[in-house]
Amino acid sequence: MTIEILTVLPELLTSPFEHSMMKRAQEKGLLTIKLHTLRKWAINKHGQVDDYQYGGGAGMVMMCEPLANAIDELQAEGKFDEIIFMTPDGKKLEQKDANTLSLKNRILIICGHYKGIDQRIRDLYVTKEISIGDYVLSGGELAAAVLVDAIGRIIPGVLNDETSALTDSFQDNLLAPPVFSRPVDFRGLQVPPILLSGDPKKIEAWRQEQALERTKQRRPDILDQE
Ligand code: ADE
Image 1 (cartoon, helix red, strand yellow):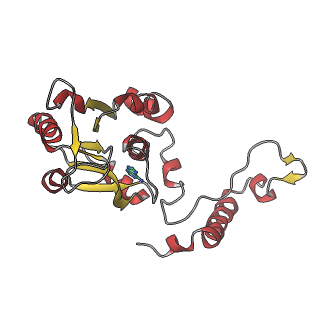
Image 2 (cartoon, rainbow, N blue to C red):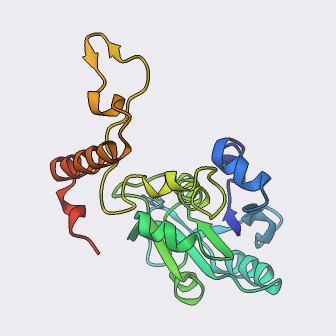
Image 3 (cartoon, rainbow, N blue to C red):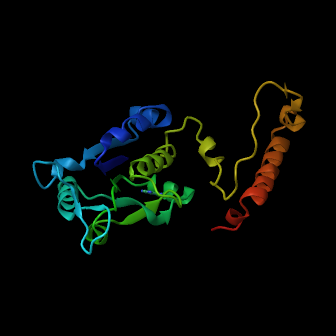
């Protein structure tokens, strides 16, 4: 899978993909990440990609031409399966969105800045608008990093232990159960004896029950979701 990112701040997006799972996904050849600097398609030699908004008001808007020219040039090599705009007014990202996107071949993510991008780019090019939560970031880059991580880690073959993505929180509308490692006794708090029982059936049943309990307590809203 190839994920391309169009941004005015590519520097913000180098480190998040150079470690851990994203590094492994790229080394295994399962994920290619390409960062594109929007300034390459600036309208003048000053590198301008934004302008005042019509109607007045504070804040600049990312202009049509640099974005359209960039997308057209990138699509000359082949169409994107999705063109995603990261924006706080988009659809709130959920696990099932990441699951769906992880099966695509080639996607483009556009990072907004300032007051956002000209509406006509949204109308003409963007196929999905995604928010990572009800708060406003200074730009779409950190949101894009979150989206790429959520997608990249579940691309088939990225995880060594295939089952571990399946037991993540949210994969089956349940939060993950509590986990324990050594020592058995930490400051008087014990590992639940059932986890030491060596009985896989009982352990699985306990984990299911704990996951359900935790979800009822913390996120009853996700229990009955499709
Ligand atoms: N850009 C700024 N805030 C954002 C958010 N919450 N989600 C996605 N993109 C954003």
